[in-house]
Image (cartoon, rainbow, N blue to C red):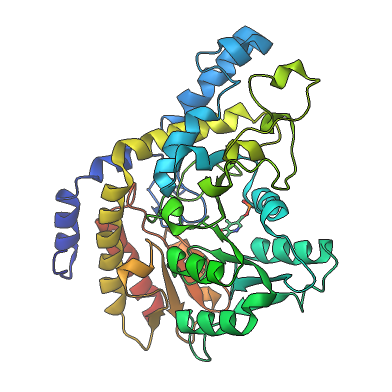
Length: 423
Ligand SMILES: *Cc1c(COP(=O)(O)O)cnc(C)c1O
């Protein structure tokens, strides 16, 4: 990591020595009314469109037009096994074995389906532990699971909270919670990278702690997949879920990922909701056989999937496969540290970064707290051509994404922020 210096020239120099710089050109960069490229730092919310996506989707549209139902077997990429084209590459991105990963449904739906299997409350052990400021959808999902099983959603929900005056979560506090309540907790469900603070948790440490108390453990990795090295298999988590439209650039509302640890791969008796796509592929179309579940994560699928959405996912993960997570993470650390360096120049009386400083505890996102600020700052920033997002009460989330963002635009963004703050 170089010593960072101020000034546009230094930003340009970093771009010149960036061996991933050409990947930016593989994406459509949104533009303003005058045709100027916007500074897009919102890849943690909706990733940009790879230019190859259109041809991948068009191919399936053509095959459907030309073949109709025959496309299931005779499309250039036959639709019947289409999800299988994704498992291996997706598994690589999240650090899992192919048998542990499937792409299906949407994120919150997958979270529910995983809880059908891995939230198994008993009279003594029925609580669910989540992190403070969990993504609202996750919180609503676990609350509704509690109610579904007849528990009070306030009493049944435990929250790992930061200490007063702090934003980040401490493992000592989780340990204390688990010591006190471990035997009442059925499931620990944590957002692998917290969407608000950008804190990236030690998944293995949390999983080991939860499992040592006899709890099941799952992670929502929506802000982790394609951003950090999740190593899901080694974490030992029972399950994980993530979406493909944030860092994975697969299009709005695209299908989601799901991980079930290998130790559950051959557990046909594990309770689950099923459909014909969870049934043994060899006999699926006999249509009358006794249910016979596919081993591994595929055994949690229900329906034949939307091929158009999967085509977009294929396009995107082909780009990931070409770059590889290690190179992406290397650039990510440098790009984000560069942004951190520049933001810090603005002064602690103006802005404060709440995301951890330690690179092992964050991905590319920085959550910048505006001191005594309000949404006007953010609105003016947007007006000046920067796309990031605002989270009440006072945080601007910025995600310089290593695949398509560059050093120069990070420099320009911080210059614009400076103007707005001094305005
Ligand atoms: C983005 C995100 C969601 C969104 O859920 P959908 O089901 O895809 O609408 C849920 N949880 C987390 C942690 C997220 O980051």
